[in-house]
Amino acid sequence: MNQETTEIYLRVKDGPKPLKLVDINQLSFNKPTVCCISGNGAVTPESAYGFARMAETYLELLFRTKDGCNVLDNVDVMTIKYAKPEGIVTGGYISDSFSEQFANALLKLLTDANGNKLNLETAKKNMSKITFFTYCAGDINLQNILSRFLDKKLLNIGYSEEEIVTIYNASFNVSYASVSSCQNKIPSVKAVSLNDSLIGQDVYNYLLEDVWDDSRRDAIYHSIDGIFLHKDQAGTLYGHLSKSATAESIQILSSGLNNAYPEKVCDHNIAYLARNKKNWKLRTCVINGDKYYSNNADCVSELLAWALCRGVEGSVNNFKAQEYIPNHYWKDLTSEFKSIIHSYDQEKLARNPVYEEKLCKKFFGNLKKKYQKFYHIPSYQKMLDTINNANSLEAIIDYIKGKYFAGIEYVLPAAQVLTNNEKTKILKAGKDKLLDEIKLEK
Image (cartoon, rainbow, N blue to C red; front, side, top):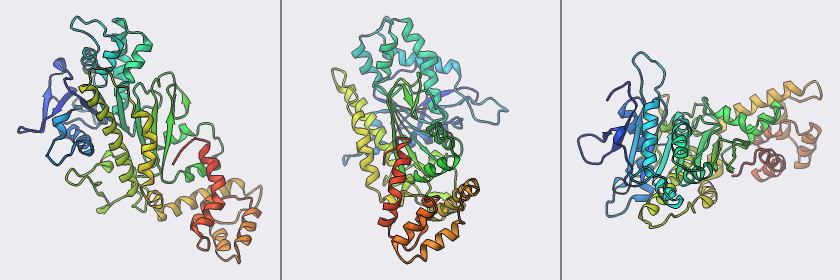
């Protein structure tokens, strides 16, 4: 290992070490390949291996059989180690020289022996060999390799911009906590948690850019409780026009991965989504010395694993086929994701009740402070006590109406005298309207 050099490794199943260093100048893709680009903290082979191992375990869902077939018998798994110059405290980086050589390796898939462009169907078939698995800065580094290096090389040998877009659409990218909010050159599934203190709030703000009322934003944030989906067509990303988003994407939005934990915890750590190779169950998360299993993290992990398997399955099928097979699975992914989400008890995907109550009180206090001068809003506890001591459902509704429905989305979940069905009926119309503003789907 050269700490100051960006390096790429091949995962090997036999040998004294799990990774084999690949000369970037000799890099080639000879079989279906999963290329793992982690966050810029992956500055050692060990950390790069950990991310590759996570992808490999996800692929057990596709390749594990009774005859002992190994993931690595079917696909190559490669992983990138970032360069980190001596004395630099923050994360590493992918060098321009490495990015250019990596782009050259991709270019070899798209040219003949004489360096000439291929016919479009062959180029798409070859590009479909590659599936990307990215995390945090890994996604933006992938986008940069394509936009800054490979685009120019393809244009220089005669591919049109439209053909380049079509070629990239034959590949696939599965990403968690992506820091790229405007580029999306490859069809992608991107998952993010609102409790990710590095990017969660940025994504949320981007989705709600047109909502200027803070209390309205709080209400929408509160309504995103569980796991939701948002789909962008080519030309948009997180609901906003983007010329650099030339491919479709599906965003998986979680209200909080570690929802078994009663406090807020930053969800930026990709390890929260890792699964055990032996039984394919979610690894328990250790916070402050205690172990927690969270359904929300389990579901998001399963969604990402399913997406990665679907992409690799298409790659393997194309590798075996004589002619290019389009990404037919893409149109089915949203419905497949919904099926996985609905297989979980929806209450178990929601925020932890203890943390939820703290969040409700915080948002209610913001609402009360803002609108107190216009009409009287009681305290959170007084409104909750009034509802719990009411004589009938009609009296509760009349009381809520008398307060202009202010803050009910924060108070009703804690009400003891209402059934879940009654709470749902009162909240449903307003909640559906809030979610529709950013077009999220359960």
